[in-house]
Length: 482
Ligand SMILES: Cc1ncc(COP(=O)(O)O)c(C=O)c1O
Image (cartoon, rainbow, N blue to C red; front, side):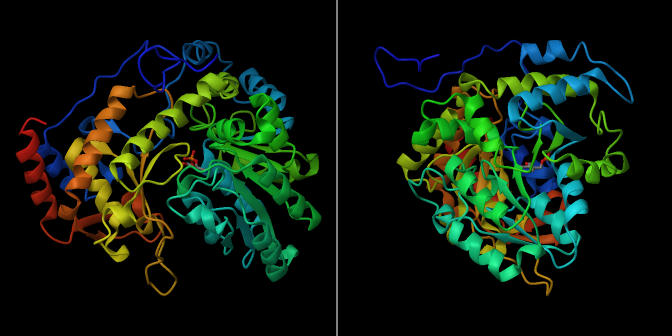
């Protein structure tokens, strides 16, 4: 389908679907939002969904399903062992990725647990373009450490580099030389690199990095959770992919890897996960971990209904019309905000619009969690729930000091096919207002700090009465009912 042209204005992103089922939203007034934020310990993970107007926390498990997915969910084959739904999924994955051995798992981090259990020994290194929170936690839990080798430009907030998720090939060679290939458990490349702003990896970089790993006998693993966004960018930004279909690009990437895993809460528009293993012996060496942690080998902790929905979702992830909508909405949001002067991660990537909190609230030190504080401010000012992706999402160093994140981001995720453009306009408007009142935002400190993955369940409090002052300024401008 060609891009839609307009008669009297510039093109805007278009929804290539129509809405058939809706969920009513609730906009609490600012005064109540302030109280809800306090009740949630200034942690947006602890808010109740009914108190949220725009839930932009994540794209995970909250993408809108299609009529075809819902229809497929009506005809699953329920069996503890040997479910035909599972075999249909395996066939579809083989058709798309060209890999026939599949280990099911209930979500992405469950795949990571299995990979870490199988490959990581104390003292081992896992090389990555960039880490993801749960991936790193599994590796460090088992005594391994992570080396992140994304190109330096990938960590620059403002850039026109088209593939900011690319791994630095010189750093990769140097790291292997330093660690010793035998000490590298595996190399993991993350498509659509989440924590640096949903930034894509080029096909060429996938190829070059995997060739280096192969040369050194290192297992190559792709985290394909955000592959569908990555594929969109390969198609529109990479010259060599211009005339290829999405399926051809997928295959070109997949052919480089020994193992591919994904969260189907993202890839597949459903809820589940799987690990694809090219080599039969390697596959068998991991098999026993599935019944141990997940469930029998033909459901892996997933409901067969979800397996049917995923199978349809994989096909939909190969459709350029479908995969274009998210990145186009994100670009629209990022461009509008950047034009206003709001510090954004550019170019816009997949997954969501990422606000550069280090600059937005540059008066807050990293020890007082600028991205965490800004996330709370978005909720107070608009009922918008984003996710902190900065120091608060890190774990402390072994000596108890803060590990300061290389980027302080607030992610405003755009779950796929969920929001309309007018809702995106609302978010843009509230972010602009907050930017003009950014001096009112202050820091946060922990009152309850879990040791692992503290951002999920930790409780914080403001370092002053800034939330009250912010809410008062908002009410003065918009009135008590907004
Ligand atoms: C790149 C990436 N890998 C892995 C995961 C973990 O997947 P899940 O949330 O299904 O456990 C996520 C989740 O956000 C992710 O973004």
